[in-house]
Length: 274
Image (tube, rainbow, N blue to C red; front, side, top):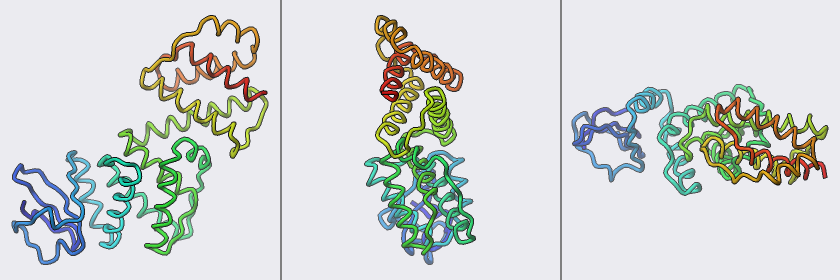
């Protein structure tokens, strides 16, 4: 491939024979390189083939605003994510997470701390991503000397989840907000307050999350009409609350929710009361 543009000493835009642009990242890879000069991908520590032209343009606009050492650091961060998650991350994380971490460091240096009211829920919803994000915050401190607030762990975790599931951040945030809304409905409806570090809270969040995932993907549990009639008679409060929750889920996701979800949710709510 040939050098198309040298962004800095560590980043080069190159063009393959197929006329597709790739980003080559490596310590000193751009030093003394000229446009049109041949370059091998083997000399790069990381090759980004951003297929989406829009994403590639955003990344090229972002890179000149960043320190060369930070670009190299983000290469290490992305490699760590791929290793821990066991898969190649979606290309949009290169822009989204790079921009987010750069701005988070800047905010922290200026003494601006973003509070994340849903940190516990994020840890429960995306536990593996949360643990990876926690390590990344430690990596950031070692690299920059800046300790990011704990709230940033949750935000980075959502970026990671977005990348490995190939879902955009707005959909993930919408579903997460729905989980929090439904939990509040449950606490109000049953007149209880769940401890955020309890196993009951963990199970509830996971149950709602998987229910939302099933509805979103169109996967339905088997109907159990006879059981539904029994639960309606035995546990009317939990049964009616389950129906209210399902209606909110339908309105938010704009997809039908099968009656079986009401049954499973009723059982779960009754367990909370017990």
